[in-house]
Figure 1 (cartoon, one colour):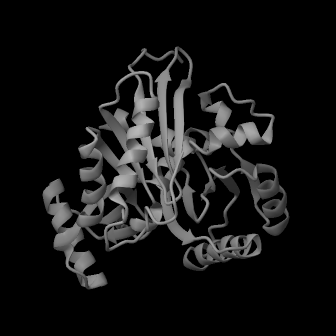
Figure 2: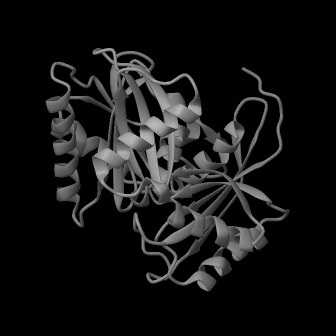
Length: 311
């Protein structure tokens, strides 16, 4: 397959410990990582929360963003934005019938969420993606919920440094979208996306998303593996008879060999750790663990860059 050459795309990942910028471009045969940069953040700059603004030290935050932009040998006006997954709620909702217009569908979602979660929907930003019909005939949607004041704080601070964020998504979705081309196209497959303090678990029947679960990671490796095992059991309890055939892992924090070994022994599922260098060219040596970690640490930012193609 040959692609038309396009301009460079920038993606920014905001995390509680660091800011990361990835700039990518398409070659004739693949993506290429053209530029990358990271700025560490002190512990008191960002405090992830669902309902309250996250950036505590706004000047330190803007200085970090400005440093990333100044280190790039060019000008960046627009970037895809990747926000901490902990500050966004994602869930699958089923409806017997959906309205024909997007506006009416959003009203239906807002009404059902307000009824279920008992908080004012007026201060929320809701988006959705159709998933198709399930076995019971319901129209399923992947619904993403964020508080307007939380997201708008990030957007305003970035606008203060002249950066337009055209597409805003949780880091877990950008991570999955980066690895999605390597996912199996048939059967029942799961994706485990791993961050420093969070993991998400998605299950697909053929290519239809049927289960989503996000978990804040504990402090120990043992608790993490127990949480993964419990998440798989939760899926099996809610989807009896639908065994997971393959588990595909996309890690932003390394430990590729350890994940393959431990999970391969822990669960009776074929486990694959997906390879970043199959999806993007970079100067990093994929056979050296520390070099591979450098590339994998930017996968959510790269996914944010790619999101601009859909803007």
